[in-house]
Length: 353
Image (cartoon, rainbow, N blue to C red):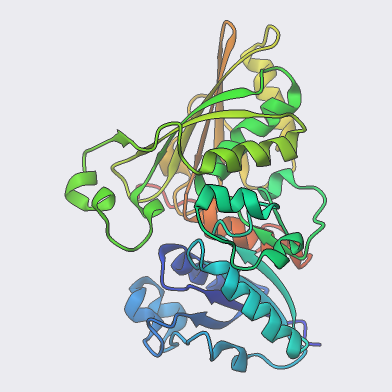
């Protein structure tokens, strides 16, 4: 079997799909094989993503019925799914069945919600639809890479972008026992978090110079955050989450508040986070307050903390499309294949975006 790992992106025409293609183009261990999109089958990738013209030349999207022909029997495959919630699971199931017939070794990282829940009913209650491949749930695990020591599954369901930012902020705090396990979260996201298809909430005249909450205390990432936080910390967690739409294209700023269980200093809390992420190449604990422009277009997260009396505040900033989706997916894929975790993800944030 060749050492080359072929990379295929399902649902490749959305914002996350475009970021995956960008990262694959610069990855030293992944070789692009196919960008899959039935709706744009045969169209040049560069027509959809002009920023990728230098990387993909005249490469074209292929349909779901064609991409497997590009892979030789016995090859290695890194399969990324950026297909929508509710559609991704069935596509992944078909892909796994087809690759098995060609004796292709495959790891899947799905950035939709379809494999974030271990229990079929939990998923169906939150998303209001049947699961497309319930028999595969046992083959997937979910969580941010920084919190999962034991990679026990062949495939990963990447947490949502809000969930990623919040989990990085709350899990070390919960593990420390210095705070109660009830957390209050305000999160602000850029318009790319709503996907490529235009809608009222992301229409530029509505979003520009505007800021508003949506689905307060009822966002579907809340149970996901609570479940993954409990899995990572061992503490049952209550999450009160108020998301906001911000007047920018990309990025998430999450602010978490919790009550202390004992007197805590800012130095103690900072030490908790520094020790928790000492071996994590993409998480930096910073003095003061973290800022979005320090992480946009990178796979990095910056965390800041504050303490007053019996209340702690943890602030977390990420790029929703990179650390919160495509970059985190590549980071997971590196782990699944036993590659250095930072491969293909070393680019610094550009600044002044």
